[in-house]
Each structure stands twice: as C-alpha cells, then as structure tokens.
Length: 353
Image 1: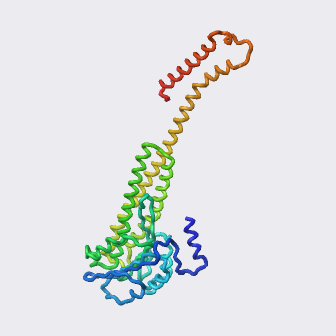
Image 2: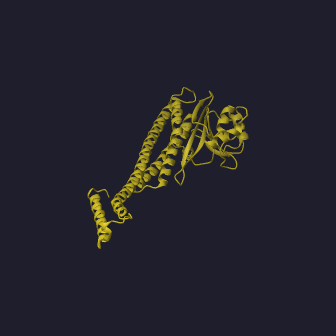
Image 3: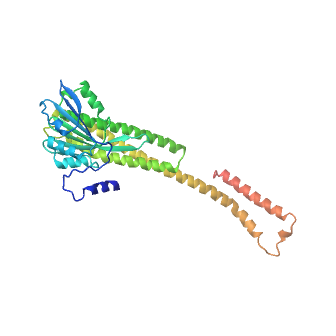
C-alpha cells in the first residue's frame, strides 16, 4: 500500500487530466495491434502510431484496438484525440491502481477491471485492464503483453460462433467473459493450495504454515476487493439503458453476472475454510504446548517427594538416628524408587502419559 501512495505522489500539483504513467513498466515500448472485422471481413495488423487508425472505416466494420504497455503517454494522448476520449479517462487508464468500475460518458462506456494470474510458486500477480466501448469500436489497454485475449482473437480469425455477426458490445462481453473465466482458473489453483495445506496441517504443524495461511488469506482479500466491484460493473452493463448495449448483448452480460456471483461465493467458502485452518493450526500448537507442559508437570510431580526426602536428610542436624543405620542410605534410595514407580504406575493407569 505504501508503494501505491508513493506512486500517486508523482502527480502532486498537476492539473486533473494530466497524463502520467503510475505503475510498473513491463515492456520497453508500447505495442499496439488493430483488428478490423465484420461478418465477411477480417484483418489484423500491428500499428506504429495513432495516425494509422484515422483511416476511414466502413460503418459495418468493428474496430478492436489493443495497447500493451502504458508508458507511452504521447501515444495515449493521440489515441484520445482519435477516439475523442476524455482526458480524465486517459488519466485513469495510466493510473494502474484503479478500483474496478464502469462509467458512462454517453458516446462510450469506460470499464476498468483487474486480471489475476497464478505464478509458479503459487503467488498471485495482477494487472489492470481498461476497456472502452464505442458505437463500432472497442479499445483495450493492458499493462503488459499476454495471451489473455488469444481465444477471442482465434474466434474472430476463424469466424467461430456469433462474434463476427454481432456488434462491438458483444466483443466487449467476450473480452470480459475471458477475464472472468480466468478467475475460475485462479480459483482452481487456490483450491489446490488450500487442499495441500489441509493435508499438511493434519500431518504436522510448522511455523511456515502460519505464514502460508496469512499469505493465502491476503490473496483472497485482494481477489474479493476486485470481484465485488466487478459484480456491480457487470450488473450495470446487464441493466444498462445505453444505446451502446443492445438487448441481445444484455442477456449475455446477465449470464456473465451469474458467473461472477459463483466466483464470489467460492471466495467466501475459501475464506471460511482458511479461518478454519487457522483455528486448527492454533489449536494444534496449543495442544502441543499442553502436552509438553503435561510431561514437565508429571516429571516435576514425581521429583517433588524425592526432593522432599533428599531435603530432610540433607539437613545438618547432629542427632538423626537414620544416619547411623548401616542400611539407611540404601533404605532411603529404595523408598525413593518405590515412590517414583508408584507414581508412574498411577499416572499410566490414569492415561496421563
């Protein structure tokens, strides 16, 4: 959280709408790809500048522009001029710690959300994805290049399903649906980690388990913070009266809302399981401590009468008849041994150890 505040300090004193990139830089320069299509036409190419987008397109052609890497503020400003995007929207796109939200600007809708990926070591990383829906275009801005939208590109190139026959609103649905589906993959990995943690906890408890539980709990909190506003954004899209969202597309967004609710329910379940794991861990540690204290208490209890006898015969009084007995020393040792064995037998009979 502190790093987020230090990033925002870079904008201190600047005017609203100032374009400053706040976030990590994953590529040396921004990469821009342009896909144009309709039911009978499809083309995909990389572009070097916003000027290449200015070429007049047929009204029936849908334009999908993807920008990977947000550090090129000049490119962002040029694209904002081409598509008439408000400077405050461009500012939010470049600020990569935005809360998931949907904003209606009349001529276009602005949706910002987060995508999560599981790493090889089990940890989660996230990136901000900004989507803008216009009458016949969709703009996608990502922090880094990835294969997240590859299935959608393949469907477009292969003319699979209804995506080429539908408008830009259906393309927006396809992109958001792909992100939501990726949440299911993340949940599967989290479930595997939780199951592994449960199995390990049954076998033994180690200090590293407590750290692992807290790390997993923190990741669930991050997911929850992204998913709750995502549910609100998808719900707004499903109920939107914007002319940019057709009635047929609204049905698909309602289905997408159901998927988001399933993910949220799964997160709540995982959170309850983690709370149970934490309680189990603490109980296990407490039981171990109790067993140790029990053993120490039994040992101390056995030695209490022996220490008492040793203390009595350790006193330096002149007149102690037992000191003159020939078998006094062995007699006292025998009494001590008998007391110790009797107490051990009693404790075992009571199943105290």
